[in-house]
Image: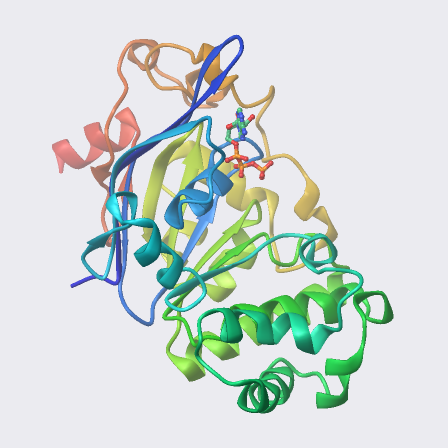
Length: 324
Ligand SMILES: Nc1ncnc2c1ncn2[C@@H]1O[C@H](COP(=O)(O)OP(=O)(O)OP(=O)(O)O)[C@@H](O)[C@H]1O
């Protein structure tokens, strides 16, 4: 059985002017010990998926479908069970560590907090565990006594990773964990994440707009566009031989890990992603698609088997695969 299964998950935000369909019918699964990357431009719904996994969305969000963590539906969990799941079974590392840490509390106390709150350690044992965690993320144990402002951005992100590891969760969700860091530090934090996943058998969901970063760390990739998964499959295949024209453009924008061009818009694509409140008819990508066909403005294709374990939501893929 998969560790995590998303079954037809959708999220709609209610705002004053109407409803924002941020995530639409996402189905994905993750095996224990595996790493799944979720890619897409800003506004494609990646963070909304991440927050939905642990029911961290604001109250104006309505979530549909099922999110099964070890067979247990997160969306149907009672509050007590959900509290036990957060940190202890699954934890999140957010973008921009400096916002996640309390500036007036020592690093060690903040890393120990989830252990103490979940009653997983007494204060003495928690202190030892903090020293161990700091070493695991490449920081000296004495850093436990430091305050966040005494650390660099990269060190603070390591602290966030230590916190996420504190209760030995089976799943870590990392939402743009390196975006706010400079290129060298980004590479160091990425290799730390890779090492932890490989050595500790932790499952990972990593979110980024940068497909090359995800391809480097993850076994599987899902590419999102306007709230839907448009391509999914093994990393190498999706990154190097994408079948959906949007994934191809995204892959072409990010030639190597950490390259400064990774802030570029997808190659060859004009325009912006659509406003989710006014999605174009047919395939949401068709107004920007470089290989658009007449029928794309009326047909919205589901994910379709696209060879080598991939699935892609494109009418051209469906026609090619049907013909072969
Ligand atoms: N609290 C909210 N209320 C209303 N709309 C929201 C809210 N949060 C996100 N959205 C909208 O939902 C859509 C998906 O946003 P989301 O942040 O999940 O995308 P993303 O791919 O993670 O983007 P980014 O990379 O910029 O974080 C966007 O159109 C966004 O404007």
